[in-house]
Length: 205
Image 1 (cartoon, rainbow, N blue to C red):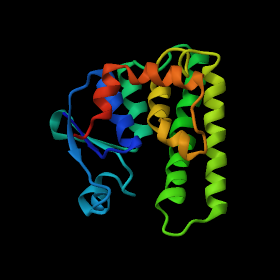
Image 2 (image 1 turned 90 degrees about the vertical axis):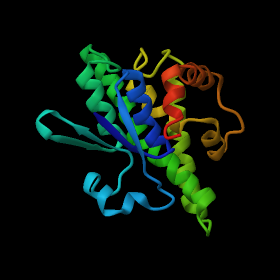
Image 3 (image 1 turned 180 degrees about the horizontal axis):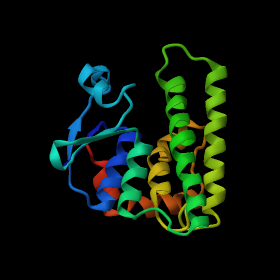
Image 4 (image 1 turned 120 degrees about the horizontal axis):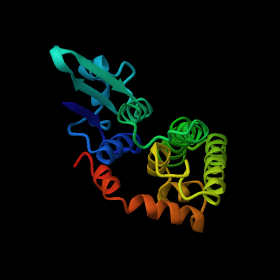
C-alpha cells in the first residue's frame, strides 16, 4: 500500500495527479505546512529536509520504501509502470528535459515569486524583479514549445504533470501577465479537463 504524505500545494498535487493517472491505489496523509507538520521528527524521518510531498510504500516481507520530493515520486512510478514517459530514446530525452524544467525551474521559481511579491512582510524589489524575470523565462519557453507540439513531450506525460500546477492563471498574473497566451490556454484546458487531473487537484480534501 502506498501512503502519500501531502498538502494542497503545487508540488503535492503533482504527486497525487500522477498516482491518479496511473490508477495506483493509495492512502492520503495530510501534512499541514502552515502548522509546520513537515518539521516534526516523524515527517523528517521520512523526508530529511521536510520536502513535500513524500511517499511511504509497504512492501512484501515487512519492508518499506520511501520517496520524497515530487520529482522522485513521479519519475519512480512512471518508470515502474512504463507509463506517462516516452519509450523512444530521443523523445524520452526531450520529455525528461521538460519534466526537469517543471520540477527544478518553474516550480521553485513560481513559489519564490509568490513568496517575495505577496507573503514577505517587507518587499525587496530586486528579489521580486529577479523571480518575475525567471518565471517569465520559464513561461516563454513553455509557450514556445507548446506552439510546436500538443503536449510538452509530444504525447501527454509526466512533463505536463510537472508543469501544470505551477502554470495556473494566478501565477501568470503574479509574473505580470494580465492574460495568458492562447497557446498556453489550449494546453492548460486540455490538461485540466482530464478526470485524473481533477481528482489529483482535490487531494487532500
